[in-house]
Image (cartoon, rainbow, N blue to C red; front, top):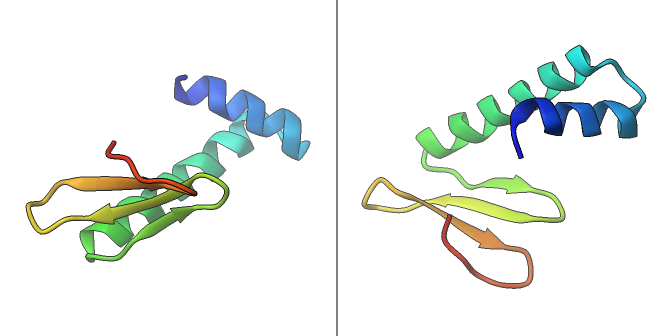
Length: 69
């Protein structure tokens, strides 16, 4: 799924314009990247967490299970 598709779904569910949804999505992505650069985890409620690893890669731990992504 690409960003415009995600923004369109977000817009419908939140009752906002696609532009507003795209701005909100950009904000979430920037916050995730900021946290990871600072060595912090970044959560996606209902989905899981991104965790930085010592080797510079990012691991994604799914809620209720583990995985890499």
